[in-house]
Image 1 (tube, rainbow, N blue to C red):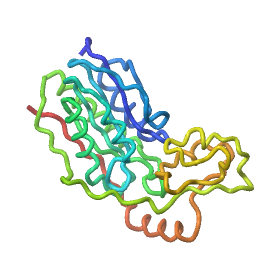
Image 2: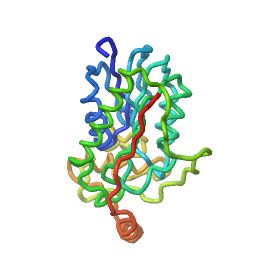
Image 3: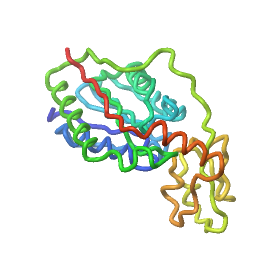
Image 4: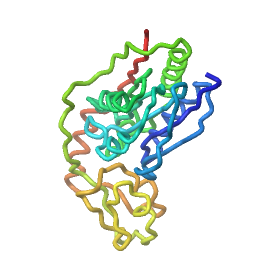
Length: 260
């Protein structure tokens, strides 16, 4: 693996998915030559890997699927026979068809997917669910997955993945809840507008969210230096109680690695 290059491509709006990627790649024994966060730029120039290279691709799960804009961006990749590690991160409800969707995209782009895993992070809309995850137990599992992927690469294994999901994938449902801004607290610093991957916040009115564009990734909440953005309202309070009641029981990572 010393002659391999490692490329990391992920969508991490609040840093959770990035943490998962970092835990995995720390075990691979290959220095990263490229680190692309699509949340910063969905049109970022993609790498051109060779057959000996490894590409780690990770995305969050929204409603059991990849975010549409992320899936569309990833379809620009050209695998050239490189090895890929597919990862999705979800908020402790379920990842449904998202991991299968990601592995399908990578295969169609010409990658040899040697590992695929679903891991848990803090929920972006209901943050008490999956709070503080990935935690130490998750990170041990992430590193175990990374080590297994490294062994698969060294052994030349290329098949036998067992990825959960169904085709056709589940229908993408709209996101009914979106962050709001407190006009009394907002200082119009425009940081949320500048960093919103969906361009759902206008610099002219940074205290307004375009709900038709918003994907509820939570980035505006995370980057606001004045803590002016949050989820609120009676509808949110009601749905939050239901979600916390239904999905707070801890779920564990699931992963599969090429075995032949």
